[in-house]
Length: 196
Ligand SMILES: O=C(O)CCC(=O)C(=O)O
Ligand SMILES: [Fe+2]
Image (cartoon, rainbow, N blue to C red):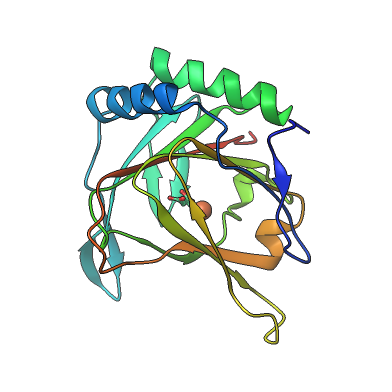
């Protein structure tokens, strides 16, 4: 494992975190490039028979289509900046990815509800590498089976790398919680490998 990645204390999981995976200068540059070059979309999902805008902007790049939150995502072709990030993340995590989901959270009320990345096309024990730039946000973990296990929260900082693998998705949900604090833009990328 890359020396900057430290194992987080979650039972029944395999989660690693490197707060300063990218330097400050590198992170600032990536943040600006991603904000400007990515084609960000405001997607809608059907919930309880109603069309609801997702509480964040998203983009999907890579080699394969993917169904997420009930949406069929047709991929856009890789951008050089995304390919460069992918290579760095692949070297650090010793794994290869063929897709990336990007999320842009414009303010503190922009969020992601509790979910697992457990779609069948990710396989039984998906490896997911998550990179964050911009504003710091709280990332929550909730155990799916053990009600006595309290939720655990970590702050994902500018230039950080989070790696979730093994039984993590089977045993835990995760989320980005809302905050009433004034918060700037945050960009997150989750690199995934879609099986065919
Ligand atoms: O923004 C984040 O850190 C979480 C993203 C996430 O969980 C996802 O895209 O599935
Ligand atoms: Fe997720």
